[in-house]
Image 1 (cartoon, helix red, strand yellow):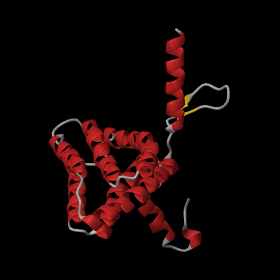
Image 2 (cartoon, one colour):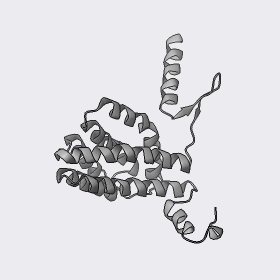
Image 3 (cartoon, helix red, strand yellow):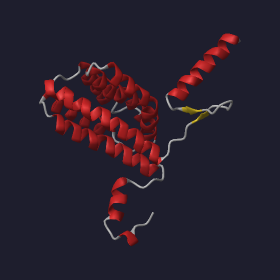
Length: 193
């Protein structure tokens, strides 16, 4: 029993460190509830890391073989269950990060992976994105990396992540960014919270 309890405690601590569980001192661990603000925060952190990685990869034009394979795996899922896309999509993004060869950048990205996976599962379970689009945009990103067009790859990544982020925010009852922008276009008195 002691071994089982010790393993359980280590697992709980790991999940707390990954941001998937919350636990105060001498409190029971509970699953973290992600709201619209958290989703935006997670995707912003991803965009910062991933877009710079794309720029750096494009300088050499080296396309990671693991990213190519992961994108092929996404394409193979097109007729499968939407949730089957999450694992190869995570591999795609993680392989780009790892291709830079910087241990600390990889570690920073991995600190987000649990929360990113939660977001991706939610997106797919609600059918917010078509699998063909999930595969097509990363394919274009790979082509842009190979062509040395880092800025274009980063811009496409921002669109790719932004679409997922804002659809998830809307599904969670938050106001999508484009709706906020439209409301701000009027006078401040017309802005509705």
